[in-house]
Amino acid sequence: MDVTDSADTSGYALCTDPADSASTTGHVLRIDPAEVRKHFERIGRFRVLVIGRSNSGKTTLLQCVCNATELPEVFNSNGEQRSYHNIENELIFRSNPGFIFHDSRGFEAGSEDELKLMKDFVTGRASTMKLEKRIHAAWFCIPLTDHDRPILAAEEFFFNECNTENVPVIVVLTKADALELVAIGELIDEGLTMREAKPRAGELAKQMLGKVKTRIETQLDECKYPPKDCLSLAGINRDSADCNPLLRCTANALNEVELQKLVISTQQVNFTLNIEYAVK
Image (cartoon, rainbow, N blue to C red):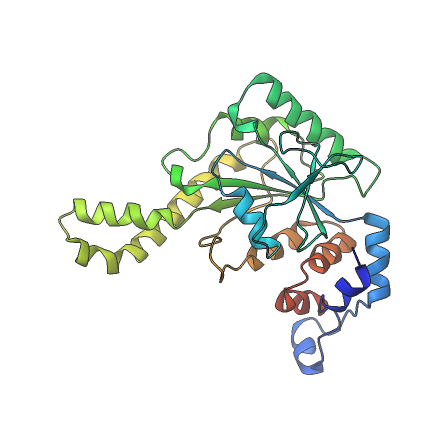
């Protein structure tokens, strides 16, 4: 990865209006390419554990974050190409190699071996002294296609048994668009025609999302290691998809300023978000 090129497009030095910066934080933090290079050389790339059952939208989410249409390349610790089926393997997109992802594939099966593998991986990667090998954040995908039962045994195990005190976990409610179809069905059951139901479905789906999100947050907050935050993302399979909320949420959840800079620097195509953090 050419860090200098990445840093030049990261947007950290793009806050040019002193009035704008004064109205937010009162000073401008300028991150030049040389300093960004130091972050990459010391920390490596931003490493994320992505968790979720099958068909929860994990791959689509990563493609959205990395502005990619292709599937990621998969490597083992020696840099050799491998298949997905090992949580230790690294998933990297050519379009944005600043991120390294680990996939929890198989975790949702809930077998004792898979659960132990997940626990051992989180424990080891959360506490390692090698910052470049550490998991910097985790994104836990929960699809709203299963909104009636969003939290299963595997999810409860993770938030009760996997020590994530040193790793911010963000719950991402994916496939929120599915609630609009559910809303249309409920309105039709109430006696409306399809023509009448469609204009009203959006507002009802929004209300349903609020209730499901509150239920999930309440349940997970009671766990031993609750997530740092929870947000919903809809339409991440569209060209106009916006992953800013997830990246902003992740950056805010990080305890180390240098990791905040790193996650924003890796998002090469996102000028607005980079400018926002440049003035903090």
